[in-house]
Image 1 (cartoon, one colour):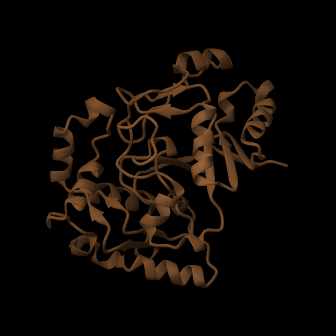
Image 2: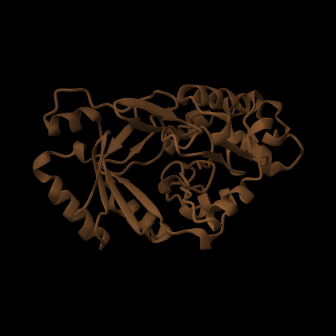
Length: 296
């Protein structure tokens, strides 16, 4: 299951095939997995239809809570006119405006249960998930954005997203209980990123050309945002934000990603130094888009 809105794109590979999802959970590329969009979801119907079509998702593998909110064209216009893109680097997806409309409680919210095009997908996802958990099935909650962008906990507010992005916040958006949690998995980038523009402080900021030269890489390494296709800002590893994220989220599984951004001769040293900093081992590490390895 995935929470949040369309203001964050997640890239996943199946073999050499690349998918970018802004609504569906990335695990849906596996045929035995179902996708759940719970009450804490903000749904752009065009994006949902495109992702369902792209992955060839059958109707019996998608479940949407009736209390999920539909992002309307009005929401998008409101957000575009708000100046948030210029002020804090917003993606102008309409997610913020839909959340604000929900909080105002004036009857303007377009809920998924009132959308004729979604009738066949609507279920009480809390009941669905409770049955799954009680029967021993595995449920994965896929959060969005990084902890440093949390509306509640961001050090650089107002340069934040429109929701809480802690593990506890994600859980609340699903309707599951804290007692259901078995593992909290935290993914760390070797080089943190922000969206382009005036998106807030980024400690130790560099650029993609510096990173490319240091790696001795002949290929362009520039990353582009999944939602707006703008060049991402990039910086060197920031231990402070990682330690704050661990303090709040208490993960028991750590993934260190993008080791291919570090020269091969010092990758093991980087893993060891990260483990020393965190005062616990790194459980998994990713070296390129296709490889995730367990630490031995």
